[in-house]
Image (cartoon, rainbow, N blue to C red):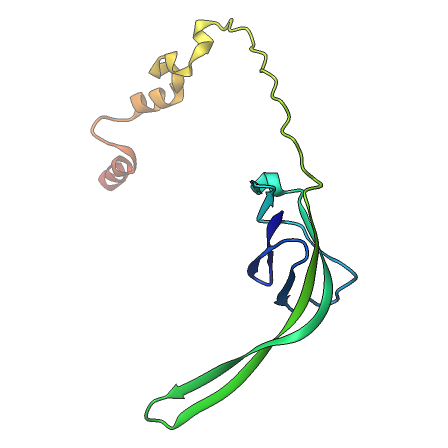
Length: 163
């Protein structure tokens, strides 16, 4: 049984008994648990997403150490500018003690939905059955009241200029 966990911005494939090196974790207790797992393999059956939601990986801190040295070199041509710097990341050693699918939930059997009787009147069946004039009587009245040859704001501006 193995799982893929995410810690320190990296993903690690772990199984019970593994000792992994992760970025430094502040304030460690006796055990560390990783809850949102990416993938869990349970004897050849792979779980991910909602299926792996209840799975938990438990680890025990073993120690701390510094990682490999990373050398940083900055150089600009023709200016005499060069800088050298080194960096060693602090790391935490974790021993994986358990990969557990304890929260495994079986999907509930779906019940067939009870269908409501289809005794609807034909008029209430679709709103498109109404006539266009019945939809907006206020619009139709405003359209009739408007003088011919004018449309909207342009017609109002033409009326104002003639006075």
